[in-house]
Length: 169
Image (tube, rainbow, N blue to C red; front, side):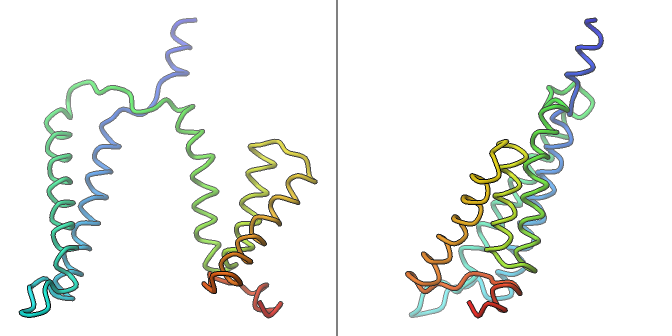
């Protein structure tokens, strides 16, 4: 009995998340540094810092942070690591992360309003267990409210998809 409980609560150790965060920060730091150098990191006499001045130093901080995380993770690589999360916890995170990732990708093709309608409806039905009426009212009302607020009141255009273009919005 005790062994099956341990297996059920087994999960991911801190080792790989730390290494992945170090890699992510390294990539972001490299991108920031290279792009900052491209736009200029110097000081323009009479004008002040060039466009890449501050982002360059942020990129350097990201690179230093990446190195620190990598070194500390590698120094304790062979030792037992505390658990980062159980598989059950990771599954719960993925149930949120996967739909949100699909949503971000769908905004490019469907626009923000249709994508938001689908995402809100999905979360309300699957995770919230709401009825169809509440789901329909909310998933239509929130994007409609956002459209009126941003497009009509603030005059800020948000990404539109083929449906909005067909409707002339």
